[in-house]
Length: 482
Image (cartoon, rainbow, N blue to C red):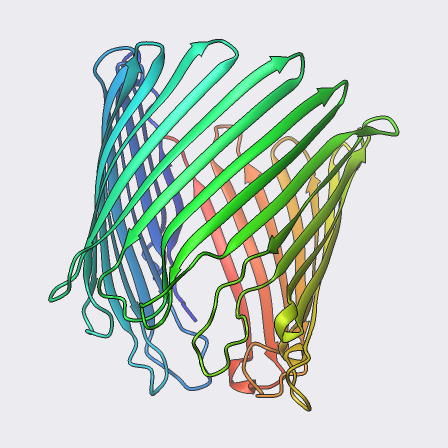
């Protein structure tokens, strides 16, 4: 656990600046093990924009045995320059270094990811043109993973020949290089069209074609993808409905790379939303997907390994009045492989509310339940797949009290519990946590601010007691303008 003193938050915004200019800097956690900083400068009313950031995090992987701390450090910046009112150039850079330490026999990770891109965009004719190049360099200093370099070039054009019609075309080419390996590439072409055919009625068409060349892959892989979508959206008074059909087929090379399968999927999706019983809003959405041309597998067990159907439905109700607002959400998902008699389901529901009890008192609460179940008819006895699927409950309550214009207090409680049969006695399978945070804040007449925080937290693992902890954070904060 980190200890000692650190600066939680320091923000600087100059009172006086030239017209059309804006400067902003912020630093958080300076002096501690986790810290970050960010800054931004806008000049000439946003024609020139420069921003940058840095972050550092130190943490421990969730392992039963003591391990050395892990860390992640990232730094980056972005520059954007407007050449005219409708044409601009942008450049971005990011470097992300991550070192993860695990318990034996895992060797850990020491990785460096560098990304940079350049974008030119602007109005051209009756449309908008965008050109981009990017370079992604991944380095694994442990040698566990192959280092790689990915270069991407892209071009896109959005054309609006008439007010009711938009047509967009995009093309990207990505080349992947690895030392001692043949080069790989991915080419993607997409076409999209949106047409308004009347009051409240829109038709959307889309087509995506992707070619994948990976000469180094020695097992089965998808070398071509094609997807087509047609959708209709209709608005009627306060209600809005959507229905769409997506067809997809993949060219899949088998493990021996001597035969090509073409599995096909169809997905029917829909959404409807509108007001009911006054100002309450109801939204229902869902989809059903079917695999109607499964591939052939050359494994020892040739039974299909793809889900033959996926189904999802969600209902959301939101409403309330000036003093009380609420929301209820329920969703159900089902993933099934009929050839293996395997089925996995999850049901989730969330209930939340915000209650303005008085002008100075506000209460928020939320409860979420997530339950998983499943079975596999091809497996007899114990354990079965359902024995590994968890059930989780989480809840939070927050009370905010504004004593006056300068003083406020808040109390927050969050708790969770997760459980399953856990036949392998793995960590993080049967856990519970309780987190209390108490805050107070006072603002002096001259703008100075003073605050405090007390946060007792507990975590308990019913299987691996070495992961249990109790921690209390005491924090004093202050800010001043000068």
